[in-house]
Length: 206
Image (tube, rainbow, N blue to C red; front, side, top):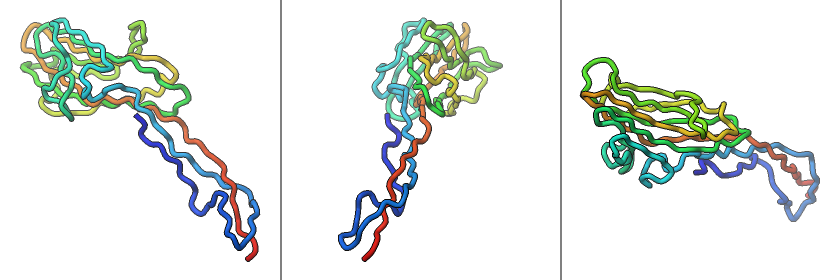
C-alpha cells in the first residue's frame, strides 16, 4: 500500500513556461523536495481477506481468523480462548534497505476468566526465517485490563534490509482461559527524502 505518491513543486517556479512577450534566461536552480513515499509491508493486516498472507497453527485445531470482536471491519484474529492452548499466527516480510524508519503498530484486546496475576500470555515476536528468535516485541498477560482495545508500537528500523517473521503466539494454562484478540497490524517503511533541482526561469525584457 502506497501511503503517499505525489511530487510537490516549489512555489513560484515555472518549468519551461515563458511569456510570449518576453525572453527567458536560466538563472541558476532551485531545490524541491519529493515527499517521502512510505510502503506498507504487511499483507492483509486487517484480516478482511481472511487468511491471505498469514500462516496459522492451533494446538486445538481452531481457525484463528474470525468475525468475533474485530477492532475494525468484519474480521480479526482470535487466539487462546481454551485451556492449554498454543496458537500461532505469523507472516514473513522483507524490510527494504536504505530506509530511515520502519514502524510497527498492532491493536490487541483480551477477555479473561482468570482472577489473579497473569497465567495466560500473548507475545509478539520477531524471528529469522529459520525460526530463530530475534526479539520479543511485546507481551501481554491475562492480568491486563479486559474488554478494551489498546495499541502496541515498536521501532523495527534496525531490521532494514532483512527478511523477518512476525509471530503472534498465545499460551494458556489448564484452567480459566483467556481470549486474545489482534487486529489492524501494520509495518510501514519510509525512505529518506529525495531532493530534485529545477531550473529557475526568469522573464527578461518586455
